[in-house]
Image 1: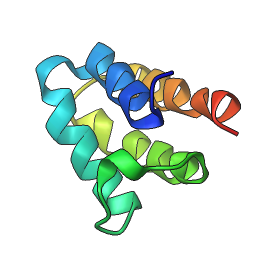
Image 2: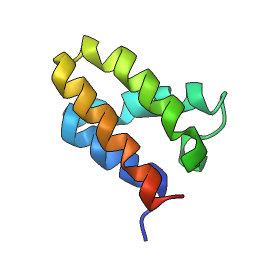
Image 3: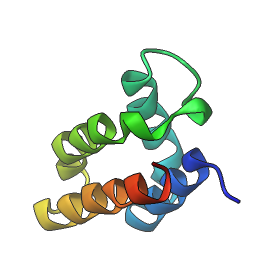
Image 4: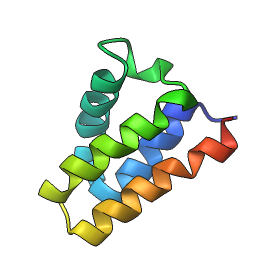
Length: 80
């Protein structure tokens, strides 16, 4: 079974390509208040999604950023 972090990174890669790793690690570090990104838990997904929604529009269209956010939020049902 994949870890939550791995699935977040896979989604980010679909939307951002090679820039995904650095971007998602930064976003998760903010959400985790400096803790290792790989330790993210599902209770942080809402906050991560808000950050993605706010910042991803600088890299892609608003519609694509919202789809990225929504894809992250779908993980909540997989990792209750």
